[in-house]
Length: 423
Image 1 (cartoon, rainbow, N blue to C red):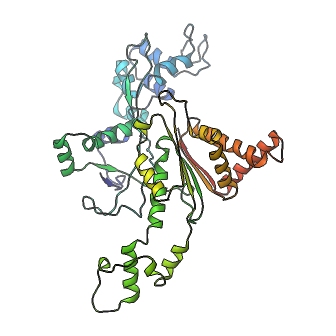
Image 2 (cartoon, rainbow, N blue to C red):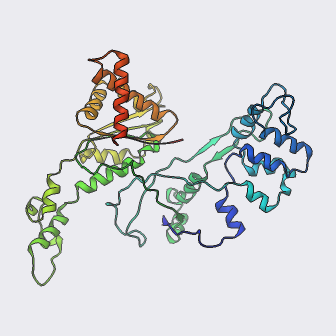
Image 3 (cartoon, one colour):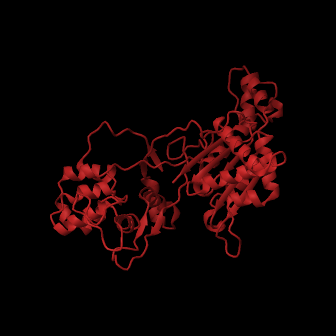
């Protein structure tokens, strides 16, 4: 896929472009915007309903100053939760279901609509690898994403409930990728001739990056698409370690020894890394660098369906980039639910090794993934292991836990315990 980072903010755009590409038409509408929209409703009942939905949770039977009354048996907060948030009703849905609001002028609509928030995805490749020319470009990057696709709850009193919803960005990306994944040769040919383009922008991170010292051990914990940046880490580490393959060693040899009047093709010099020793100080220095061990924790629901990078991780293990790989699957038929924190706590060898890497080898810990309790649970599991295996012998349970919490906090302050959690 061709990408572009052109800044389009300096050029004027049409109204159609603004609505189609800049305004958020799909997110659940907020209470404040419902109230603003109610002021354009020409139907009194629709105006009253919108103001009811937009009222504060504390609205009472005497009204709240906006002509809003409490409904029998249900609070205003319940109505908004059930009707708007659970059903993921957007501004488009509201305009359809409250047609008298469609008299809103364009400037009023633009005043109500929020801008589309950016979506951030982790790059799962290394800038040091994959520089082969593809479609005329000498560099490419990879990202991983989960397609958001779900049904809203069914409600007997809501004929528009139980709707299929999709993510704005991931559904768009899925459409772009579908020709490459299908067996339709015509679609694949058309895509090859006219590759899709997307606009991207970099968001550098100052914390979630590899240590500069190759000898630093790493503990990488990435359930689901949280594994994406770690694939980039591992690819980068592989590129660093394999930077002195025979071709490059031959280049070092020719640059360091040959001063003739013509160039030698490195492929013609059948020279090994060992034979390049002493020809370049940087080569010798890099060769002496010891790379630290890397333990990778991954979790998903189904091995066959969700473990997309099994082959890549196995290759990293075969090459010695990954020392240990722990995989947890929470929905395998006939098996106990397993999460990454479950493996840490139940696998004695795993727990002991984890504590040893953190406390003796001074490993850096990275946690990445969905913030629905995962980050907290993993951190609690690591704290518990530290309390039991490092501080439990000299202290009682409460004191050991306090010391373990402080140890993790200190790791965070020193940049050895880094989290990248999203909701």
